[in-house]
Length: 134
Image (cartoon, rainbow, N blue to C red; front, side, top):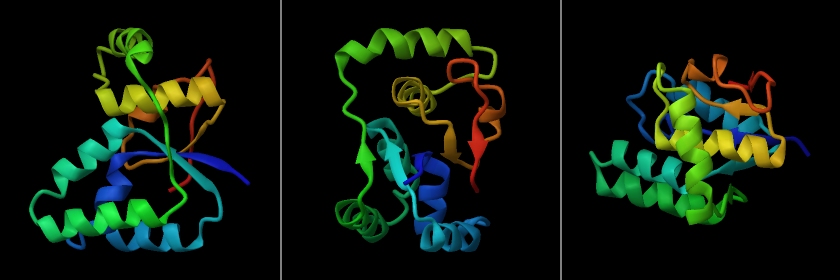
């Protein structure tokens, strides 16, 4: 089974029906057979952008409970690596959610990503390019 990183943009589009990417993202999630990895910073970012409606946030949290999404257990020991990544990509800039995904990529060897951001064209995991799946 293919492992794939999951960024906040597609999650937001999945639950915000007014998002221009919503239908494309819904179709992708219905048809993709792989395993998703994400992080708590990505979930936090998603919740922030879904704050226009507590019911939508609740639906998102229920979805997280039902789906076999792997939430990476990053902790205080990950901070130095995340800080280094943020400084390395400071000209883009890289936010906490993106740095946390890049860290998973490096630790787990995952280079597939579902994102709506173009930043991952520049980001490299152990000098490998990311493969966009959406």
